[in-house]
Image (cartoon, rainbow over the protein chains, first blue to last red):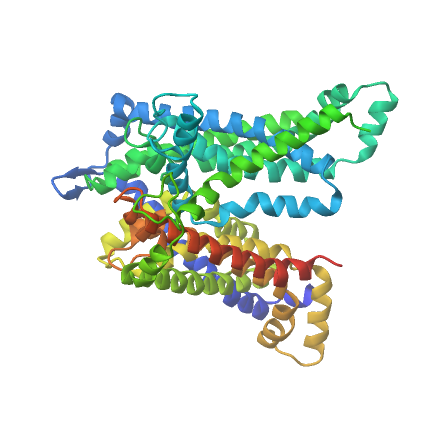
Length: 286
Length: 262
Protein backbone atom coordinates (compact mmCIF):
# COMPACT_ATOMS: atom_id res chain seq x y z
CA UNK A 1 0.00 0.00 0.00
CA UNK A 2 3.03 2.29 -0.16
CA UNK A 3 1.82 3.88 -3.36
CA UNK A 4 -1.45 4.80 -1.69
CA UNK A 5 -0.08 6.66 1.26
CA UNK A 6 1.09 9.85 -0.43
CA UNK A 7 -0.82 13.07 0.06
CA UNK A 8 -2.91 13.14 -3.09
CA UNK A 9 -4.30 9.67 -2.56
CA UNK A 10 -5.19 10.42 1.05
CA UNK A 11 -7.16 13.36 -0.28
CA UNK A 12 -8.89 11.10 -2.80
CA UNK A 13 -9.72 8.67 -0.02
CA UNK A 14 -11.46 11.47 1.84
CA UNK A 15 -13.77 11.94 -1.13
CA UNK A 16 -15.00 8.40 -0.64
CA UNK A 17 -15.32 8.45 3.12
CA UNK A 18 -16.58 11.98 3.76
CA UNK A 19 -20.20 11.57 2.58
CA UNK A 20 -20.88 8.70 5.01
CA UNK A 21 -19.09 10.45 7.87
CA UNK A 22 -20.90 13.72 7.18
CA UNK A 23 -24.26 11.94 7.07
CA UNK A 24 -23.57 10.17 10.37
CA UNK A 25 -22.48 13.38 12.08
CA UNK A 26 -25.37 15.45 10.72
CA UNK A 27 -28.17 12.97 11.33
CA UNK A 28 -26.91 10.85 14.20
CA UNK A 29 -24.25 12.59 16.32
CA UNK A 30 -25.78 16.08 16.26
CA UNK A 31 -29.37 14.86 16.88
CA UNK A 32 -28.10 12.76 19.73
CA UNK A 33 -26.34 15.76 21.28
CA UNK A 34 -29.56 17.72 20.83
CA UNK A 35 -31.51 15.02 22.58
CA UNK A 36 -29.12 14.98 25.53
CA UNK A 37 -29.39 18.75 25.88
CA UNK A 38 -33.20 18.63 25.61
CA UNK A 39 -33.26 16.02 28.39
CA UNK A 40 -31.74 18.72 30.61
CA UNK A 41 -34.45 21.19 29.69
CA UNK A 42 -38.00 21.35 30.94
CA UNK A 43 -41.39 21.94 29.45
CA UNK A 44 -43.25 25.06 30.48
CA UNK A 45 -46.66 25.20 28.85
CA UNK A 46 -45.97 24.22 25.26
CA UNK A 47 -42.48 25.71 25.26
CA UNK A 48 -39.19 23.97 25.91
CA UNK A 49 -37.13 26.02 28.35
CA UNK A 50 -33.43 25.23 28.63
CA UNK A 51 -32.93 25.20 32.36
CA UNK A 52 -29.86 22.91 32.24
CA UNK A 53 -30.74 20.87 35.29
CA UNK A 54 -31.26 17.21 36.10
CA UNK A 55 -34.92 17.59 37.08
CA UNK A 56 -36.15 15.07 34.50
CA UNK A 57 -33.72 12.46 35.81
CA UNK A 58 -34.56 13.23 39.43
CA UNK A 59 -38.23 12.87 38.49
CA UNK A 60 -37.58 9.40 37.15
CA UNK A 61 -36.10 8.19 40.40
CA UNK A 62 -38.64 9.92 42.61
CA UNK A 63 -41.88 9.06 40.81
CA UNK A 64 -43.07 5.48 41.24
CA UNK A 65 -44.95 5.74 37.92
CA UNK A 66 -41.70 5.81 35.92
CA UNK A 67 -39.82 3.36 38.12
CA UNK A 68 -42.67 0.91 37.83
CA UNK A 69 -42.42 1.21 34.04
CA UNK A 70 -38.78 0.24 34.16
CA UNK A 71 -39.59 -2.60 36.54
CA UNK A 72 -42.35 -3.95 34.24
CA UNK A 73 -40.00 -3.70 31.25
CA UNK A 74 -37.26 -5.58 33.07
CA UNK A 75 -39.68 -8.20 34.35
CA UNK A 76 -41.07 -8.89 30.87
CA UNK A 77 -37.63 -8.87 29.27
CA UNK A 78 -36.04 -11.28 31.74
CA UNK A 79 -39.04 -13.62 31.55
CA UNK A 80 -39.01 -13.56 27.73
CA UNK A 81 -35.27 -14.16 27.56
CA UNK A 82 -35.45 -17.19 29.87
CA UNK A 83 -38.57 -18.77 28.30
CA UNK A 84 -37.31 -18.21 24.73
CA UNK A 85 -33.91 -19.75 25.48
CA UNK A 86 -35.46 -22.79 27.16
CA UNK A 87 -37.85 -23.34 24.24
CA UNK A 88 -35.33 -22.61 21.49
CA UNK A 89 -32.45 -24.78 22.65
CA UNK A 90 -34.21 -28.16 22.23
CA UNK A 91 -35.58 -27.06 18.84
CA UNK A 92 -32.13 -25.97 17.62
CA UNK A 93 -30.72 -29.27 18.87
CA UNK A 94 -33.42 -31.30 17.10
CA UNK A 95 -32.84 -29.44 13.83
CA UNK A 96 -29.06 -29.85 14.08
CA UNK A 97 -29.04 -33.49 15.20
CA UNK A 98 -32.22 -35.21 14.07
CA UNK A 99 -33.32 -33.45 10.91
CA UNK A 100 -31.48 -34.83 7.83
CA UNK A 101 -28.74 -32.47 6.53
CA UNK A 102 -30.48 -31.49 3.31
CA UNK A 103 -33.73 -30.62 5.13
CA UNK A 104 -32.09 -28.43 7.78
CA UNK A 105 -31.93 -25.36 5.57
CA UNK A 106 -35.61 -25.77 4.65
CA UNK A 107 -36.49 -26.19 8.33
CA UNK A 108 -34.72 -22.94 9.18
CA UNK A 109 -36.32 -21.03 6.32
CA UNK A 110 -39.71 -22.32 7.44
CA UNK A 111 -38.97 -21.07 10.96
CA UNK A 112 -38.25 -17.56 9.65
CA UNK A 113 -41.11 -17.43 7.16
CA UNK A 114 -43.94 -16.25 9.48
CA UNK A 115 -41.81 -13.30 10.55
CA UNK A 116 -41.85 -11.78 7.11
CA UNK A 117 -45.14 -10.11 7.83
CA UNK A 118 -45.01 -6.55 9.00
CA UNK A 119 -44.11 -6.25 12.66
CA UNK A 120 -47.34 -4.42 13.45
CA UNK A 121 -49.36 -7.11 11.68
CA UNK A 122 -47.64 -9.87 13.64
CA UNK A 123 -48.69 -8.41 16.97
CA UNK A 124 -52.19 -7.88 15.59
CA UNK A 125 -52.44 -11.52 14.58
CA UNK A 126 -51.64 -12.57 18.14
CA UNK A 127 -54.51 -10.36 19.20
CA UNK A 128 -56.75 -12.40 16.89
CA UNK A 129 -55.57 -15.59 18.56
CA UNK A 130 -55.76 -14.38 22.15
CA UNK A 131 -58.83 -12.11 22.21
CA UNK A 132 -61.89 -12.93 24.33
CA UNK A 133 -63.69 -14.65 21.45
CA UNK A 134 -60.51 -15.49 19.56
CA UNK A 135 -59.24 -18.84 18.37
CA UNK A 136 -57.82 -20.10 21.67
CA UNK A 137 -60.75 -19.14 23.89
CA UNK A 138 -63.17 -20.42 21.28
CA UNK A 139 -61.45 -23.80 21.00
CA UNK A 140 -61.13 -24.22 24.76
CA UNK A 141 -64.82 -23.36 25.21
CA UNK A 142 -65.82 -25.85 22.50
CA UNK A 143 -63.83 -28.65 24.07
CA UNK A 144 -65.24 -27.70 27.43
CA UNK A 145 -61.99 -27.16 29.31
CA UNK A 146 -63.16 -23.71 30.38
CA UNK A 147 -66.61 -22.29 30.84
CA UNK A 148 -65.68 -18.62 30.71
CA UNK A 149 -63.27 -17.05 28.23
CA UNK A 150 -59.80 -16.48 29.68
CA UNK A 151 -58.67 -12.85 29.83
CA UNK A 152 -55.63 -13.30 27.59
CA UNK A 153 -55.52 -10.19 25.44
CA UNK A 154 -54.48 -6.87 26.99
CA UNK A 155 -52.41 -8.55 29.68
CA UNK A 156 -48.72 -8.81 30.36
CA UNK A 157 -49.05 -12.52 29.53
CA UNK A 158 -50.07 -11.59 25.98
CA UNK A 159 -47.03 -9.32 25.65
CA UNK A 160 -44.79 -12.16 26.82
CA UNK A 161 -46.37 -14.62 24.35
CA UNK A 162 -45.94 -12.15 21.49
CA UNK A 163 -42.28 -11.60 22.35
CA UNK A 164 -41.50 -15.28 22.95
CA UNK A 165 -42.94 -16.07 19.50
CA UNK A 166 -40.33 -13.86 17.82
CA UNK A 167 -37.37 -14.65 20.03
CA UNK A 168 -37.78 -18.42 19.91
CA UNK A 169 -37.13 -18.09 16.18
CA UNK A 170 -34.16 -15.76 16.68
CA UNK A 171 -32.55 -17.88 19.39
CA UNK A 172 -33.14 -21.09 17.46
CA UNK A 173 -31.10 -19.62 14.61
CA UNK A 174 -28.21 -18.46 16.82
CA UNK A 175 -28.06 -21.66 18.87
CA UNK A 176 -28.34 -23.82 15.74
CA UNK A 177 -25.40 -22.03 14.13
CA UNK A 178 -23.40 -22.74 17.28
CA UNK A 179 -24.38 -26.39 17.43
CA UNK A 180 -23.42 -27.25 13.85
CA UNK A 181 -20.01 -25.64 14.30
CA UNK A 182 -19.15 -28.14 17.03
CA UNK A 183 -16.94 -30.92 15.81
CA UNK A 184 -18.53 -34.40 16.14
CA UNK A 185 -15.22 -35.45 17.72
CA UNK A 186 -16.31 -33.90 21.02
CA UNK A 187 -19.24 -36.29 21.19
CA UNK A 188 -17.13 -39.28 20.17
CA UNK A 189 -14.42 -38.46 22.71
CA UNK A 190 -17.00 -38.00 25.43
CA UNK A 191 -18.67 -41.31 24.56
CA UNK A 192 -15.28 -43.07 24.50
CA UNK A 193 -14.63 -41.82 27.99
CA UNK A 194 -17.85 -43.44 29.13
CA UNK A 195 -20.31 -40.58 29.25
CA UNK A 196 -23.94 -41.26 28.42
CA UNK A 197 -25.93 -39.01 26.11
CA UNK A 198 -27.15 -36.79 28.93
CA UNK A 199 -23.71 -36.42 30.50
CA UNK A 200 -22.22 -35.57 27.10
CA UNK A 201 -24.83 -32.87 26.62
CA UNK A 202 -24.55 -31.43 30.12
CA UNK A 203 -20.78 -31.45 30.48
CA UNK A 204 -19.61 -30.99 26.88
CA UNK A 205 -22.16 -29.64 24.41
CA UNK A 206 -23.94 -27.15 26.69
CA UNK A 207 -20.78 -25.42 28.00
CA UNK A 208 -19.41 -25.18 24.45
CA UNK A 209 -22.56 -23.47 23.19
CA UNK A 210 -22.93 -21.18 26.21
CA UNK A 211 -21.15 -18.16 24.61
CA UNK A 212 -23.57 -18.40 21.67
CA UNK A 213 -26.54 -18.60 24.02
CA UNK A 214 -25.30 -15.50 25.82
CA UNK A 215 -25.02 -13.57 22.55
CA UNK A 216 -28.55 -14.58 21.60
CA UNK A 217 -29.88 -13.79 25.07
CA UNK A 218 -28.25 -10.37 25.02
CA UNK A 219 -29.78 -9.63 21.62
CA UNK A 220 -33.16 -10.71 22.99
CA UNK A 221 -32.72 -8.43 25.98
CA UNK A 222 -31.83 -5.38 23.89
CA UNK A 223 -34.58 -5.79 21.31
CA UNK A 224 -37.20 -6.71 23.89
CA UNK A 225 -36.63 -3.91 26.39
CA UNK A 226 -36.69 -1.21 23.73
CA UNK A 227 -39.81 -2.39 21.93
CA UNK A 228 -43.01 -0.38 21.85
CA UNK A 229 -45.28 -2.17 19.37
CA UNK A 230 -45.76 -5.55 21.06
CA UNK A 231 -46.59 -4.24 24.56
CA UNK A 232 -48.78 -1.50 23.13
CA UNK A 233 -50.88 -3.81 20.95
CA UNK A 234 -50.95 -6.91 23.15
CA UNK A 235 -50.40 -5.60 26.66
CA UNK A 236 -52.95 -2.83 26.58
CA UNK A 237 -52.77 -0.03 29.09
CA UNK A 238 -52.72 -1.99 32.33
CA UNK A 239 -49.04 -2.37 33.04
CA UNK A 240 -47.07 0.13 30.97
CA UNK A 241 -43.52 -0.61 29.92
CA UNK A 242 -40.90 2.14 29.76
CA UNK A 243 -41.08 2.54 25.94
CA UNK A 244 -44.86 2.89 26.25
CA UNK A 245 -44.43 5.63 28.84
CA UNK A 246 -41.89 7.38 26.58
CA UNK A 247 -44.30 7.31 23.64
CA UNK A 248 -47.05 8.60 25.89
CA UNK A 249 -44.93 11.61 26.84
CA UNK A 250 -44.43 12.31 23.15
CA UNK A 251 -47.99 11.79 22.03
CA UNK A 252 -50.55 12.94 24.51
CA UNK A 253 -48.41 15.33 26.50
CA UNK A 254 -45.88 16.53 23.89
CA UNK A 255 -43.30 16.49 26.67
CA UNK A 256 -40.11 15.98 24.69
CA UNK A 257 -37.67 16.73 27.56
CA UNK A 258 -39.10 13.96 29.77
CA UNK A 259 -39.23 11.55 26.81
CA UNK A 260 -35.58 12.30 26.01
CA UNK A 261 -34.47 11.77 29.62
CA UNK A 262 -36.40 8.47 29.84
CA UNK A 263 -34.86 7.27 26.55
CA UNK A 264 -31.37 8.03 27.82
CA UNK A 265 -32.13 6.09 31.02
CA UNK A 266 -33.33 3.16 28.87
CA UNK A 267 -30.10 3.36 26.90
CA UNK A 268 -28.18 3.30 30.19
CA UNK A 269 -29.97 0.10 31.23
CA UNK A 270 -29.01 -1.55 27.93
CA UNK A 271 -25.40 -0.43 28.37
CA UNK A 272 -25.28 -1.94 31.86
CA UNK A 273 -26.66 -5.20 30.46
CA UNK A 274 -24.01 -5.10 27.73
CA UNK A 275 -21.17 -4.59 30.20
CA UNK A 276 -22.57 -7.38 32.36
CA UNK A 277 -22.72 -9.78 29.40
CA UNK A 278 -19.24 -8.77 28.24
CA UNK A 279 -17.69 -9.57 31.60
CA UNK A 280 -19.59 -12.78 31.84
CA UNK A 281 -18.55 -13.91 28.38
CA UNK A 282 -14.90 -13.20 29.05
CA UNK A 283 -15.03 -15.22 32.24
CA UNK A 284 -16.54 -18.10 30.28
CA UNK A 285 -13.74 -18.06 27.74
CA UNK A 286 -10.94 -17.86 30.30
CA UNK B 1 -29.29 -45.32 17.14
CA UNK B 2 -31.85 -43.25 18.94
CA UNK B 3 -34.62 -44.90 20.90
CA UNK B 4 -38.15 -44.83 19.53
CA UNK B 5 -39.41 -42.94 22.56
CA UNK B 6 -36.91 -40.12 22.07
CA UNK B 7 -37.80 -39.95 18.37
CA UNK B 8 -41.48 -39.54 19.23
CA UNK B 9 -40.62 -36.91 21.81
CA UNK B 10 -38.44 -34.95 19.41
CA UNK B 11 -41.01 -35.14 16.64
CA UNK B 12 -43.78 -33.92 18.94
CA UNK B 13 -41.66 -31.05 20.22
CA UNK B 14 -40.67 -30.05 16.69
CA UNK B 15 -44.29 -30.01 15.52
CA UNK B 16 -45.50 -28.19 18.66
CA UNK B 17 -43.00 -25.33 18.31
CA UNK B 18 -43.57 -24.99 14.56
CA UNK B 19 -47.30 -24.96 15.28
CA UNK B 20 -46.73 -22.14 17.77
CA UNK B 21 -44.62 -20.24 15.22
CA UNK B 22 -47.19 -20.61 12.44
CA UNK B 23 -50.40 -20.22 14.47
CA UNK B 24 -50.81 -16.41 14.24
CA UNK B 25 -49.99 -16.20 10.53
CA UNK B 26 -52.36 -19.08 9.76
CA UNK B 27 -55.17 -17.39 11.69
CA UNK B 28 -54.37 -14.05 10.02
CA UNK B 29 -54.55 -15.45 6.49
CA UNK B 30 -57.56 -17.70 7.13
CA UNK B 31 -59.73 -14.94 8.58
CA UNK B 32 -58.76 -12.50 5.83
CA UNK B 33 -61.26 -14.57 3.80
CA UNK B 34 -63.90 -14.34 6.52
CA UNK B 35 -67.41 -13.81 5.20
CA UNK B 36 -68.53 -11.61 8.04
CA UNK B 37 -67.42 -8.49 9.81
CA UNK B 38 -65.28 -10.05 12.57
CA UNK B 39 -62.07 -12.06 12.01
CA UNK B 40 -62.85 -14.50 14.82
CA UNK B 41 -64.43 -17.97 14.97
CA UNK B 42 -66.68 -19.33 13.62
CA UNK B 43 -65.36 -19.19 10.07
CA UNK B 44 -68.38 -18.39 7.91
CA UNK B 45 -67.02 -19.04 4.45
CA UNK B 46 -64.73 -17.63 1.82
CA UNK B 47 -65.03 -14.15 0.40
CA UNK B 48 -62.58 -11.85 -1.34
CA UNK B 49 -64.42 -8.67 -0.45
CA UNK B 50 -61.86 -7.61 2.18
CA UNK B 51 -59.11 -7.74 -0.41
CA UNK B 52 -61.29 -5.64 -2.69
CA UNK B 53 -61.78 -3.23 0.21
CA UNK B 54 -58.01 -3.00 0.68
CA UNK B 55 -57.41 -2.19 -2.97
CA UNK B 56 -60.22 0.35 -2.93
CA UNK B 57 -58.76 2.11 0.14
CA UNK B 58 -56.79 5.01 -1.33
CA UNK B 59 -55.11 5.82 1.99
CA UNK B 60 -53.76 2.29 2.32
CA UNK B 61 -52.65 2.18 -1.30
CA UNK B 62 -50.83 5.50 -1.08
CA UNK B 63 -49.20 4.35 2.18
CA UNK B 64 -48.06 1.22 0.35
CA UNK B 65 -46.60 3.37 -2.40
CA UNK B 66 -44.92 5.65 0.15
CA UNK B 67 -43.39 2.64 1.90
CA UNK B 68 -41.96 1.33 -1.36
CA UNK B 69 -40.55 4.74 -2.34
CA UNK B 70 -38.95 5.33 1.05
CA UNK B 71 -37.59 1.78 1.28
CA UNK B 72 -36.06 1.75 -2.20
CA UNK B 73 -34.57 5.25 -2.21
CA UNK B 74 -33.28 5.29 1.36
CA UNK B 75 -31.68 1.87 0.78
CA UNK B 76 -30.00 2.97 -2.44
CA UNK B 77 -28.56 6.04 -0.69
CA UNK B 78 -27.45 3.98 2.32
CA UNK B 79 -25.80 1.44 0.00
CA UNK B 80 -24.06 4.12 -2.04
CA UNK B 81 -22.71 5.93 1.02
CA UNK B 82 -21.78 2.63 2.66
CA UNK B 83 -20.00 1.32 -0.42
CA UNK B 84 -17.95 4.49 -0.94
CA UNK B 85 -16.93 4.60 2.71
CA UNK B 86 -16.04 0.89 2.69
CA UNK B 87 -13.97 1.41 -0.46
CA UNK B 88 -12.16 4.42 0.95
CA UNK B 89 -11.45 2.83 4.31
CA UNK B 90 -10.27 -0.52 2.99
CA UNK B 91 -8.15 0.74 0.08
CA UNK B 92 -6.40 3.75 1.56
CA UNK B 93 -4.57 4.36 4.78
CA UNK B 94 -6.34 7.24 6.45
CA UNK B 95 -5.51 8.94 9.73
CA UNK B 96 -8.01 7.79 12.38
CA UNK B 97 -9.60 5.13 10.20
CA UNK B 98 -10.47 2.93 13.19
CA UNK B 99 -12.37 5.83 14.72
CA UNK B 100 -14.19 6.45 11.43
CA UNK B 101 -15.29 2.81 11.27
CA UNK B 102 -16.64 3.05 14.81
CA UNK B 103 -18.42 6.32 13.99
CA UNK B 104 -20.14 4.95 10.89
CA UNK B 105 -21.33 1.79 12.67
CA UNK B 106 -22.31 3.60 15.89
CA UNK B 107 -26.04 4.02 15.04
CA UNK B 108 -26.34 0.21 15.04
CA UNK B 109 -25.84 0.16 18.80
CA UNK B 110 -28.59 2.66 19.58
CA UNK B 111 -32.30 1.87 19.58
CA UNK B 112 -34.50 3.22 16.81
CA UNK B 113 -36.54 5.15 19.35
CA UNK B 114 -33.51 7.22 20.33
CA UNK B 115 -32.52 7.88 16.70
CA UNK B 116 -36.09 8.96 15.94
CA UNK B 117 -36.30 11.20 19.00
CA UNK B 118 -32.99 12.88 18.24
CA UNK B 119 -34.04 13.62 14.67
CA UNK B 120 -37.43 14.85 15.87
CA UNK B 121 -35.78 17.33 18.22
CA UNK B 122 -33.35 18.46 15.50
CA UNK B 123 -36.05 18.90 12.83
CA UNK B 124 -38.26 20.76 15.30
CA UNK B 125 -35.44 23.11 16.18
CA UNK B 126 -34.57 23.74 12.53
CA UNK B 127 -38.23 24.26 11.68
CA UNK B 128 -38.24 21.46 9.09
CA UNK B 129 -41.72 20.09 8.43
CA UNK B 130 -42.14 16.35 8.87
CA UNK B 131 -42.69 14.48 5.60
CA UNK B 132 -41.61 11.38 3.72
CA UNK B 133 -38.21 13.06 3.33
CA UNK B 134 -37.61 13.15 7.06
CA UNK B 135 -38.62 9.48 7.32
CA UNK B 136 -36.17 8.70 4.50
CA UNK B 137 -33.35 10.50 6.31
CA UNK B 138 -34.05 8.41 9.43
CA UNK B 139 -34.03 5.19 7.42
CA UNK B 140 -30.69 6.03 5.83
CA UNK B 141 -29.30 6.59 9.35
CA UNK B 142 -30.34 3.09 10.48
CA UNK B 143 -29.32 1.34 7.25
CA UNK B 144 -25.99 3.01 6.51
CA UNK B 145 -24.08 1.13 9.28
CA UNK B 146 -25.56 -2.14 8.08
CA UNK B 147 -24.64 -1.54 4.42
CA UNK B 148 -21.16 -0.35 5.40
CA UNK B 149 -20.52 -3.37 7.64
CA UNK B 150 -21.68 -5.92 5.05
CA UNK B 151 -19.75 -4.38 2.16
CA UNK B 152 -16.64 -3.60 4.22
CA UNK B 153 -16.48 -7.20 5.43
CA UNK B 154 -16.44 -8.51 1.87
CA UNK B 155 -13.60 -6.27 0.63
CA UNK B 156 -10.71 -8.73 0.54
CA UNK B 157 -7.08 -8.57 -0.51
CA UNK B 158 -7.46 -10.68 -3.62
CA UNK B 159 -9.63 -7.95 -5.15
CA UNK B 160 -6.92 -5.44 -4.37
CA UNK B 161 -4.57 -7.13 -6.82
CA UNK B 162 -7.15 -6.99 -9.59
CA UNK B 163 -7.70 -3.31 -8.84
CA UNK B 164 -3.96 -2.70 -8.98
CA UNK B 165 -3.81 -4.43 -12.34
CA UNK B 166 -6.60 -2.20 -13.65
CA UNK B 167 -4.73 0.86 -12.40
CA UNK B 168 -1.55 -0.33 -14.15
CA UNK B 169 -3.59 -0.61 -17.33
CA UNK B 170 -4.53 3.05 -17.03
CA UNK B 171 -7.85 3.16 -15.18
CA UNK B 172 -8.35 6.08 -12.82
CA UNK B 173 -9.69 5.76 -9.28
CA UNK B 174 -13.35 6.21 -10.12
CA UNK B 175 -13.12 3.84 -13.07
CA UNK B 176 -11.53 1.24 -10.81
CA UNK B 177 -14.27 1.64 -8.22
CA UNK B 178 -17.12 1.65 -10.71
CA UNK B 179 -15.91 -0.93 -13.25
CA UNK B 180 -13.79 -3.29 -11.13
CA UNK B 181 -14.64 -3.15 -7.42
CA UNK B 182 -18.41 -2.66 -7.62
CA UNK B 183 -19.07 -5.61 -10.01
CA UNK B 184 -16.80 -7.89 -7.98
CA UNK B 185 -18.67 -7.05 -4.78
CA UNK B 186 -22.14 -7.16 -6.38
CA UNK B 187 -23.43 -10.12 -4.29
CA UNK B 188 -22.72 -8.36 -1.01
CA UNK B 189 -23.93 -5.01 -2.34
CA UNK B 190 -27.22 -6.65 -3.34
CA UNK B 191 -27.46 -8.42 0.00
CA UNK B 192 -26.98 -5.07 1.78
CA UNK B 193 -29.52 -3.42 -0.49
CA UNK B 194 -32.25 -6.04 -0.02
CA UNK B 195 -31.65 -6.23 3.72
CA UNK B 196 -31.98 -2.45 3.99
CA UNK B 197 -35.16 -2.50 1.93
CA UNK B 198 -36.65 -5.10 4.28
CA UNK B 199 -35.69 -3.15 7.39
CA UNK B 200 -36.99 0.11 6.00
CA UNK B 201 -40.18 -1.55 4.74
CA UNK B 202 -41.03 -2.90 8.18
CA UNK B 203 -39.75 -0.02 10.28
CA UNK B 204 -42.38 1.58 12.50
CA UNK B 205 -41.12 3.89 15.21
CA UNK B 206 -39.03 6.24 13.02
CA UNK B 207 -41.78 6.43 10.39
CA UNK B 208 -44.36 7.05 13.10
CA UNK B 209 -42.50 9.88 14.81
CA UNK B 210 -41.04 11.55 11.72
CA UNK B 211 -44.06 11.65 9.42
CA UNK B 212 -47.24 13.64 9.51
CA UNK B 213 -49.61 13.42 6.54
CA UNK B 214 -47.82 11.11 4.13
CA UNK B 215 -47.36 7.97 6.19
CA UNK B 216 -45.81 4.59 5.44
CA UNK B 217 -47.71 1.31 5.47
CA UNK B 218 -46.86 0.15 9.04
CA UNK B 219 -48.08 3.51 10.37
CA UNK B 220 -51.29 3.31 8.33
CA UNK B 221 -51.91 -0.25 9.55
CA UNK B 222 -51.26 1.00 13.08
CA UNK B 223 -54.05 3.55 12.73
CA UNK B 224 -56.36 0.84 11.33
CA UNK B 225 -55.82 -1.11 14.56
CA UNK B 226 -57.64 1.58 16.49
CA UNK B 227 -60.90 0.29 15.01
CA UNK B 228 -60.26 -3.08 16.65
CA UNK B 229 -60.37 -6.49 15.00
CA UNK B 230 -61.28 -6.15 11.35
CA UNK B 231 -60.95 -8.62 8.44
CA UNK B 232 -59.65 -5.78 6.29
CA UNK B 233 -56.60 -5.53 8.55
CA UNK B 234 -56.18 -9.28 8.05
CA UNK B 235 -56.31 -8.81 4.29
CA UNK B 236 -53.67 -6.06 4.18
CA UNK B 237 -51.54 -8.09 6.60
CA UNK B 238 -51.77 -11.16 4.37
CA UNK B 239 -50.83 -9.07 1.34
CA UNK B 240 -47.75 -7.71 3.11
CA UNK B 241 -46.86 -11.28 4.04
CA UNK B 242 -47.19 -12.35 0.39
CA UNK B 243 -45.03 -9.44 -0.81
CA UNK B 244 -42.35 -10.12 1.80
CA UNK B 245 -42.23 -13.83 1.07
CA UNK B 246 -41.86 -12.92 -2.60
CA UNK B 247 -38.89 -10.73 -1.70
CA UNK B 248 -37.44 -13.55 0.41
CA UNK B 249 -37.66 -15.93 -2.55
CA UNK B 250 -35.99 -13.36 -4.85
CA UNK B 251 -33.27 -12.89 -2.24
CA UNK B 252 -32.75 -16.63 -1.93
CA UNK B 253 -32.52 -17.18 -5.68
CA UNK B 254 -30.49 -14.17 -6.80
CA UNK B 255 -28.31 -13.27 -3.85
CA UNK B 256 -27.63 -16.07 -1.44
CA UNK B 257 -27.54 -18.93 -3.91
CA UNK B 258 -24.89 -17.15 -5.97
CA UNK B 259 -22.71 -16.74 -2.96
CA UNK B 260 -22.69 -20.34 -1.81
CA UNK B 261 -20.68 -22.56 -4.16
CA UNK B 262 -22.75 -25.37 -5.61
